[in-house]
Amino acid sequence: MRAFYQRLFPFRYLFQWLNHSASPSNDFAHREFAFTLPNDAYLRYQSFVSADLLRKQCMQLIPSRFEIGPVYSTNPRDRKTLRKASMFRPISKELVFDVDMTDYDSIRTCCQGASICGRCWSFITMAIKVVDAALREDFGFKHVLWVYSGRRGAHAWVCDRRARDMDDGKRRAVAGYLEVLRGGDKGGKKVNVKRPLHPHLDRSLRLLRDHFQADILLDQDPWRADDRFAALLALLPDAELAAALRKKWESAPERPSASKWADIDVLAAQGAGSAALDGKALKEAKQDIILEYTYPRLDAEVSKKLNHLLKSPFCVHPGTGRVCVPIDVRKVEEFDPLAVPTVTDLLGEIDAWDGSHSSEEDDAENAKKLQDWEKTSLKPYVELFRAFVSGLLKDERVVKREREEGGESMEF
Ligand code: ZN
Image 1 (cartoon, protein in one colour):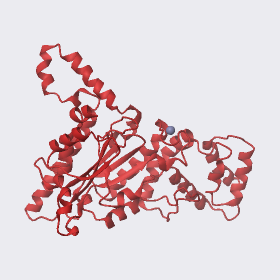
Image 2 (image 1 turned 180 degrees about the horizontal axis):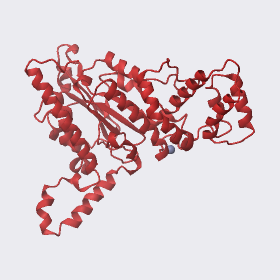
Image 3 (image 1 turned 135 degrees about the vertical axis):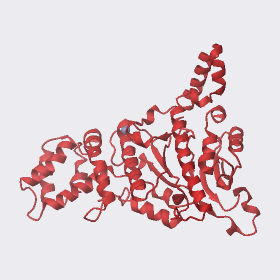
Image 4 (image 1 turned 120 degrees about the vertical axis):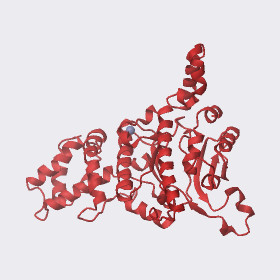
């Protein structure tokens, strides 16, 4: 891990990302970092003036991970020396979101607990698509960074100044806007939404419909087992239709979910439902079921508080050894969590690169200029992060100039 911090962790870009400028400022210096040490001790309220000092501390303490908290009104290290405790308060932080496979255990059939595979990762892909679209199209945010959490989930960091300046009330409002499934693991219907559908839900359904067909009905096949189709029947709006379906499915053991899903409309068309059942109610119930099985399950608590800490991008997950790399949202379908490099892979790649280049004198000059991460499969991820940070800094310069000129056009 020391070699990882020394040779691979992109501290310079992390600094620029959090500092919103290349020259040092309080955006970075007053930012809280929290370290988890190898002996599991947890060190809060750490702060650093520069990327280099953060790097030195990481090389000295070799944290198994570190988290990023808010920018405070004063330096977090000085908080105990202040005359009044109220002088120390959080003033800004990225708006963050956390989606984790734990919240999908009741509907995924391929894996349980800590394990993941390509099939259940599609739940995270769906969540990223829906949340990213809402953040950009409904809230107008531009700088949304998605990061693999290292095992079975993803984090979003919304870095626009307008998002960073939000108080807890506004954060709760955004989290509430995105929350559609209610009731946790208690069972019962989790989706209860008004009609006509809110444009966000209408768009979400459009984004999710194909995933429902491929990833849920075919891959997860959640109602195939004879002890599982009751969950589907419980979500239908008509008891007579449900009874007719039950009869059909009991006489056709292990009937695939895609067939069962199609049976609903077929039997309804044959008049198996009660006289009261209308096509609209059935259509809406089916939309609700699609949402229940595909709509993002966010850990809302993470988003609601300005002072919530979240694991830094590019940390290493201690369980998997994988680096928490950024996910290119434009190619989110292609992201494969099981192909993300581990620290051991990366250090091996540096050695292999050095080994194959040291003897060739022509390359010696070029080799000196290369950063170690450029010799490894971490390269595309660092470049993605660098491009993201550069886009953010460009907009920050515009905002700063407008503020200096007295313009308020970028204000909330
Ligand atoms: Zn799986």
